[in-house]
Image (cartoon, rainbow, N blue to C red):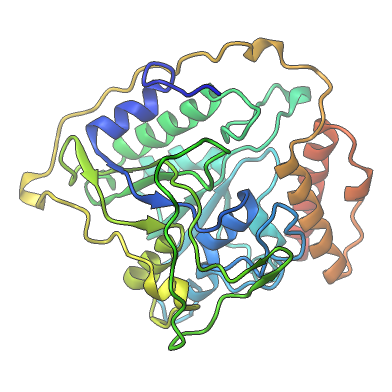
Length: 350
């Protein structure tokens, strides 16, 4: 097994050193990507603990739905790559309420004009679109990590140069640990009968009463001291809990996991009078070895394939006949083409 050094991840390492790193942020599920993504949006995964979470996103109530309360003064935006889709476009509510979806191509301009909502979620690209010379930047195995470093740098620089920078907090976090060994065991949790239960998993049997392995988490803000280390325990439910706490009229947690998740609205350790004004210059990403040798025809990543199957399930539920069926995907390029077409057709349904 190999690990990345600060020299091979210079962008993320610089931000971690210059702002704040969490050393006790755990994934929400001792499992794979999609269930952990769903916990970041809904504090629940619909009972799924594996990557095969095809139907799980369909009817989950997410924090975005809570924010959509017409009496709520705060709004959200989900920036997604034009290449591929979002697991959130498999959610029936968000299919029918798509005003919050924007192309990531608009993000830098929106920052420059001070036009960001209260809560912004940014989705990376999950697979290569070789036909159009665009490559995955999610850092999901087995893709080179330098594209993801470039995305992180782009988000930071757009926000740093925005008039909204003095009141912004950027969280960079990973859904799961990627199989890397960690010497810190995932904590056990105690269900609280005073709150709704999390949908249990039957295969395998799990009550979601244990966190997953630690993941990297970095906070960036001009109101954070250089070199801050945050030891408080967080998990992806903390995102839902924090957004609800600050930006939602409805303060009722989805379930006991959200109710017990720590919020991070108190991590800023500088006052506005002492706000940092220096401009942290990020180094260029370290070019990953072997990146130019990616095959022109490759299998789709498991994440992209399951996202496609989830979008197929959503289309089936809505009676939308997609131009291409997810079962016909054989290559990564076909998976990307499917996600583009399915996104366009589901957008028109919305």
